[in-house]
Image (tube, rainbow, N blue to C red; front, side, top):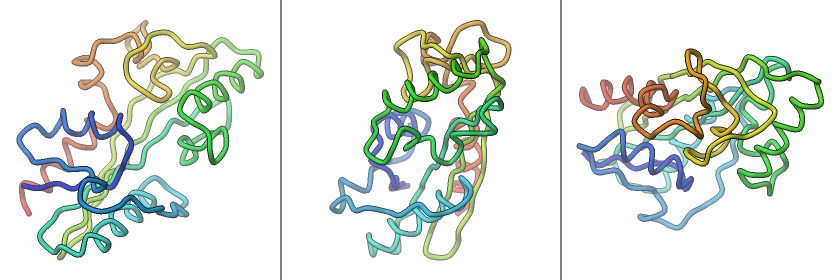
Length: 195
């Protein structure tokens, strides 16, 4: 099956391709010119659906299955921030390193060594006939410093429950086992296999 990803995020593309080895997975930017999608939803699910619908419509191909992910980290000590704003936490033109540094700074400013936190991944699937959404979570704690170079985004500052190392320090196989995105994709694959 051809799955078209409604993202240009290289980290997400790599992770989704690794988790969907038996499917043809193509970023939409390989089929059409990239375009801005306004993510004005109030939840991860709403934003994932907005992205999937926009790419499905732009492709104008009724035989594709479009998959979109919206994900982020929520930190208890920061009242759930950055949440749906994880990708632009340090500002509209910020990169992943800017976002990571801002989040570590904000936790440090609270004067705490760590905070309970969790990642959420919402995956939307849009076809010519239906729309679906699923979620996955990974719970743990957010640190005010980074350790490790694996993963992407906030991974170097996040320690999953039951572990002493950050996602940035864990090997790829362990990360895939724990990943919020992997959990959501597992559910999404059930839907895709039954289309």
